[in-house]
Image 1: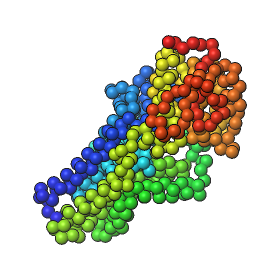
Image 2: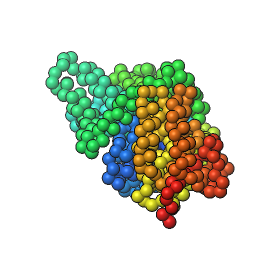
Image 3: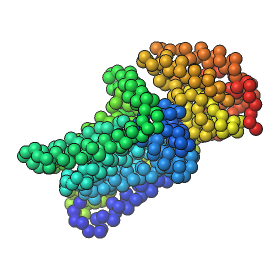
Image 4: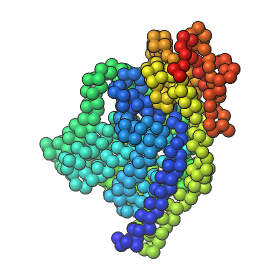
Length: 536
């Protein structure tokens, strides 16, 4: 951007404020959107932690515990509500946009920072990446972008303090979710390159920054490991985050993974094609008279951002959130690049025009999603066929008909019900997916879940009869379904049900008259233990 006077800066900053204000408005409008199951997992685990229950003690998951710490912090401060969860996402999202502004400005120019921040604020909303839901990826990229910004400062003026802070934040990204490890690898390789480029021989002073970085990077993980060990849940933690994760990560073939990637990439591109196009142009423009150090920095950030969405070749929609900061940075660089090759009068106006076009396209194509549809309808449309709105009705019924010290069992992958109802699970399996997968642990897990339920005798059992909550495949072991039929008939009575997927009913309720057979698909069925009466 030509010049550095106020007149060339005020317009881009105003556009940034406008884009962020729009994103904030949309997130506040949809702040009551029902929790999806990953949010339910994080919220339930966090709620248990606020009750003094260590992670992995009463609920099992393959994720690292950083996301539970994030959720437990906001729940402790502001209460266990849907609004709290999504307000935390709003804050983290805006902080990430601010960091991208600072990163783009430091690497290139104010205009690059404006482009990075504005594009991220709007594209992180889109349904193709499930952007309005507080998935762990949003928290990963906050720490990853903060670490990348610190790395950008390190490249200009290396210091042990910056290496320490960069390592610690990158370690926090991994702690939130394992996918964050790739951002830490990027930073370590860049520090090595930077030290080699600026020194002809290996010496203590050149090895020390990398050593400090690696020590700081490992520190959050080491402290967490020690805490988990002290709390007595190390064996559970190790199995679920290491041993089971290895089995889970080898089930999708490369060809299936490529098909999934292309499907989601096409869907994302159809929703933000101006941003994709200009970011791609920015990628090619990067090689035009840009210093080798900057090229490697930006290419490294792009490459390892891409790797972060690839583990296991699952390519879930929300994994692509991890790639959005890199996409936004290249979008911002393109605006910086064209401003350098335009006459002074249009050096600011043309890039701002591109930003406005990107915002306008999104608001027109996704107008109903962003500004009109209710939170319940948004949930039904983004997660078609999943019982997330219905989970609220189930939890209200459970909360009304049970006491605080009673447990419930959910035969389905709907931990959000536990969080809503604020009731503890009778089984530590809060997802049914591991029981249905094709690995050596599946049968053991099914028998273990059965033993836990029979021992704890929960007040209510909730059976979720939709395959989206089980993901049964032709190779899945069916043992648990045979047990369910026999056990419920002998020990429990059907007392209510909620049909799944009726998007015309924005406020579903539990129906108590003539509950259908649990074999009827598309239903959540409630069963009360025969030897108890409701606490009311």
